[in-house]
Length: 216
Image (cartoon, rainbow, N blue to C red):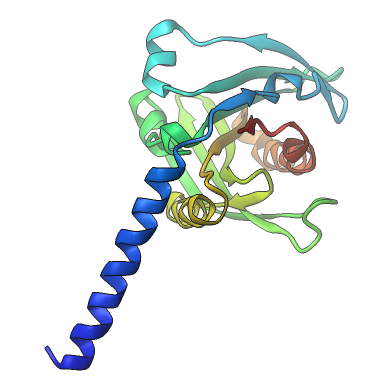
């Protein structure tokens, strides 16, 4: 290793040590308001009923706060919503993935790709993840994404890790959430279901920052 390379490596190491020491000295903020439970029970003509996971699933998810709701419209279409929030102390994200959960539940993923969602808060659009899965004669159209710092919408856990790191350095906060919106449908109605779940996700994108938990 050249003297220049050694000097650069040493400088990077010292900066890293300094940042870690600064973070440790500041301590971690605590959640003072969860707020997610205040997300409207009616969204885009869909009215929700609250649901809850079993104790074993709740322990596995290990969230600081979650909401699990079934939104239904007058036509009988039902869209399910899950938001799992992790505060700074818990590292801001889940290690569970939809692909793992689907396969564990007996679902077969048929398609997986990005969809571009556009809303009032994100007029240029953001990338979300779309999965089409099948279990027997039932199909699931699912959209999911990660969110950090209230308004940072991210399609991968890697992107979220970068934002969490930046947030911890700059703002002493690296909380985040995993959001999943899905609808169960039949083979003949897949395209309609995909559009419904995408439209609902776009409405949620505008709402979620206003109900983001508060840490101090």
